[in-house]
Image 1 (cartoon, rainbow, N blue to C red):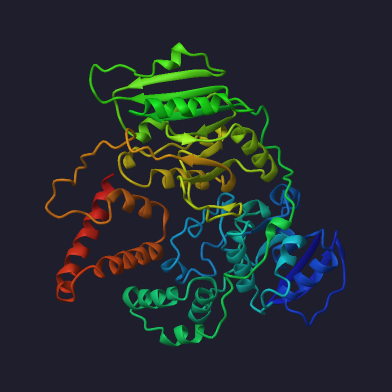
Image 2: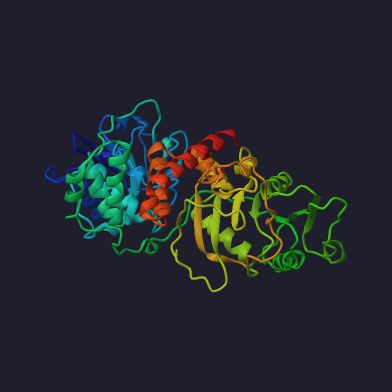
Length: 509
């Protein structure tokens, strides 16, 4: 392990396995890291502000960096390097960081952190090793996180979590430069209008300044060349239960059960919550008892409808080490559960989400990576992670319950990892399912809230104010493009009223 200590943006000390070694003082911090990565290509590189070195939790290092595609850093300070506006153009789950737990984010810190030499070497001759160390770290994390570098804010890196290094925030010129290099070009203009509208600033000079910088988000590198084998023991008994909410899809559900029965790694229990809103109706799933199944079936019949309630009822019945959140119109091959366990053990993850394509849909995301989404019909979760997690009843019959569930897991310290393979086919059956038209309290109102209060609920719950403002502007631009120029004034009044109603209703959910 190589430890590079810095102060005032300069390297002041380098140690290898506890012994001080010489270094080239003329090199900046980023170049020094790369120099030692090349010299020790199988080691781990740790960076630290000199005042934090004595506070590093060395005993946790191997647990934190449990495979070679992890980049982790930490600073207690709530203010981030890009706190001055990146949220205007980035609505992802990775910006509003929970500093109390291991949290997935490409927001990094120069205070203390680490990366394997193997991962760092992927950027040799790919990006400039600039003097601004914070910019360098953020650039690596932003580029590589979608390609399979697992980036975290990790409080276990330090012993005393009350100590922090003051963050020197990026200025507005650096912010626009970062936006230009790591997002599509149109986003720098959207960023400009956000500052203009919400902060009454006119950053035309930073916008023009950013145009000179080349893109970095299309840099070609392959992190899959770095083999992964986690040191963590995530799987113990390898038992798994499957939960399936269903309504009006008898034949589709039968096919799902057949796929489960053919698994090379069989589930212990399949928990089915069957819903039928018609009073006096009875179960139509006769094959649950008339046929033999290689697993126990827990069948719950209810007249109460709603996917959130159904999944919560099913989760309350889980008794195995793992749970597969399945749906009643999925198809998958016989190796699904066995293969997903192999991936879970390989990457040391507590939550896994598979690709979930419909027929003839093309796979776009081909790299294993941290994802900001969560699928309630295609995910595997260790049951112990669900102690304080459930599907929000505030979102029943609305939108965003999957996102909310995934965010609850992240807030508890459990990252969600996307695997393109194994895959689950989503038939999206045109009948049955949760298609009962709900009646919301605002349905009969003269003026309708927009966006839906359930969407606003999740935005208000998990995003910071700049992210919400950015979403508001994008929603406005998208909607006003459909309006006649002569109607823009009336539309603005209508949009503002709809937005305020949505905020008000979201607080009542």
